Every structure is written in structure tokens, then in C-alpha cells.
Image (cartoon, rainbow, N blue to C red):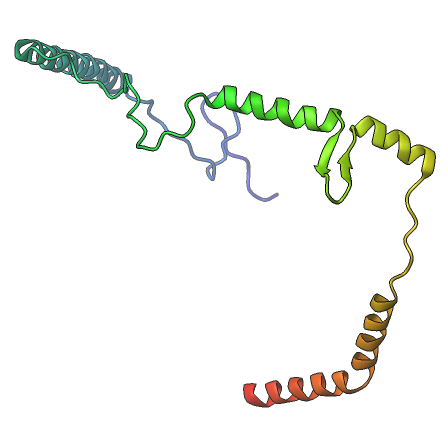
Length: 170
């Protein structure tokens, strides 16, 4: 340490690479800006209030009520008016559907198809179990035919089409 540390008049160490602002913020300018903003806000609010009062007096002289953006009456629905009371119609539909789910009745009397309440259908299902279906012979034949097509000519044809598409893209 060949250099001696510098000190100020009070004997404190001084680092010359550290700097700071030697003067303070101008409080008077900040105060004036605040006052100007408050005065401007009061003037603007007063001017807007006066302007709305002027508009209101002008409309009163014409004998019309002040204009409003809120619609007091809904525009009439064009003809044909099919539904006059939607909530009541919805409730009636729900009651009809509920009674269909909770009562016995015919769906197709000629074919002998009936409806039963959901609760009763669930009881029958628990007692008897799910119905067992027989495999459909036609469905098995069709699936075998599709598998053969995939394993034979169908695969070759698909590969040929893929090759033709790749050749066109080049």
C-alpha cells in the first residue's frame, strides 16, 4: 500500500470513484406543479358540469325529456310471435318430460313398444342383468372381408398411391 488513504476535513475516508447528487430536488417546482394540476382539475370539472347543465336547459326548452341511452321499452318482436311466456313454456316442457320419465305409456302401440319409469327399468336391470347379444354373423363376415382387403391388395394399392403422391411433391 504505497498510497495513503485520502481523508476529508473530518478525517473520514474518501473514495473518489463514488459520486452522488450534490443538490436536492426542487421542492418549490414540485409544489407548483401540484397546485397547477389541482386548479386545472377544478376548472375542467366546473366546465363539464356547466356544459351538461346547458344541454339540460336546452332540452327542457324544446319540451322533450332528456335523451337517454337506456331503453325504457324493448323493441317489438317481429311477427310471428310464437312464444309469449318463455319461462312458463320451459316449465311446462320440463313437467312433460319428467312425467314421461316417471310413468308408463305407449311409444308405438302397433309394434308393442312401451316406456316404463326409469326407477322400474333400473330395478329390472339389477334383477335380470344386462341382455346378452348374439354375435351377428353378417358383421363377422364383413370384418373378415375388410381384414383380407387390408392384408392383400388394399395395402398394395395404398402403398402405390403413397408413392405416386411422393413423386408429385418432388
